[in-house]
Image (cartoon, rainbow, N blue to C red; front, side, top):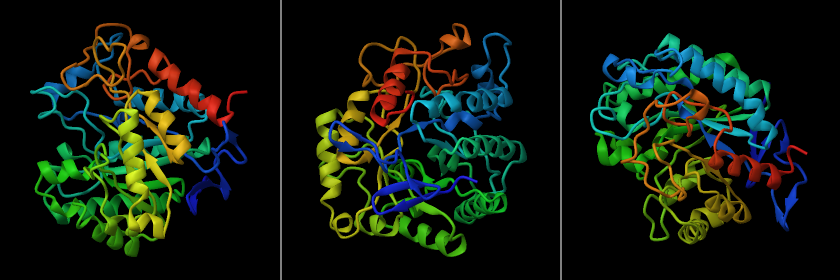
Length: 361
């Protein structure tokens, strides 16, 4: 059974720092946690109107079991390149950001009252088991703002937390880092769930830690800025076990200044903790800012039509449709997903992680 832990600012797996003893270009790599955003590994769409958009090109049907099977098949190759963590989420993430899809699809591991859906839970168990077998960590998110709107209020949200955490407890999972919700700034701005705001999210951590003490807790905001946009509050940074944030939309210079601003926070200086990005972009240049600053970095590749030479190109107005064989489809977040390392962006990331971490030879 794989166990994740924290020792100071380091992540440890089974009692040993990740990448034990590894230095690269005079920087200590030991204790970092390179990761991939793979929130669609358990994806399914309950809305027949949008479900047809995710069909596999060779069969003409969407198959959630095939999706998680292919994800699990890809994980050993990812790990061989030094990727030791993936982000999953009970409510996934945005598959396509266009009207008529983003506001209608339904990928939710919870019923509106917070009960776990059996089929979704089985797929989650399969993904968790495979990561465990490989000695990998799962950053498991619970809520995503679009699907959070399907929940029947705070009581249902807390039931979802309790059922999901009991599921992990009963399985004996110890390789999981808990993420309350993806981008709580967005949650607050677009839903009625102010409980996730930076001024109150620590209350969720404290409640869950009291009822389910065996886990490590945090949550993410959107792309941080040096001016403080999307930055976790001092109070939340004190309560969290690790500091989780996103780099979306940030160029390297701005991301570097944002990291320095975060490290300058009183709460961090008083009690330094692991810093980890679990969503950024396909821009390896941003990763190159992070690891020398002792920040773990997460690859996020939406996969859109006509993806050009600039990995910072906004993905919103660039939808991807199924117009070729599965093995040619890019990205990890727009289903149907090719979980293989099959594009220049993916190869650049995985090869660079292997070089930094010393994996793969």
